[in-house]
Image 1 (tube, rainbow, N blue to C red):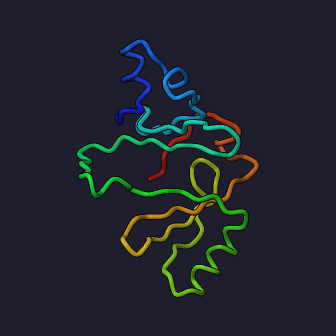
Image 2: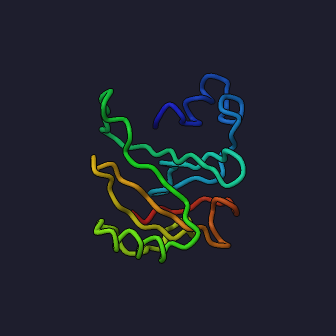
Length: 131
């Protein structure tokens, strides 16, 4: 897992809370094992961390994707599409958010998401990944 891995830090006597002053809000599970997690940055802000075997990044290729919260994902999708930009359909994600995806002109993936009343970002609880 990445440098943010709680397992790695615990080996060194530290925790995510101590090192970054952020609690783990919930974990993503695959085949019964944690492969990602959300760090709670306070308020409605979070950092997603995922393990990706074989991933190698150069100094010029640091971003896999970033997420932006929207209040009305249907309106956001309609607006983006009206500008001639390809955007995916709305999907209900395993963390109980709605999401859609597009790419910036350099190919960086942008995730749009809308929280729901059941979103794991607020309720916690591990979620089984469906991708």
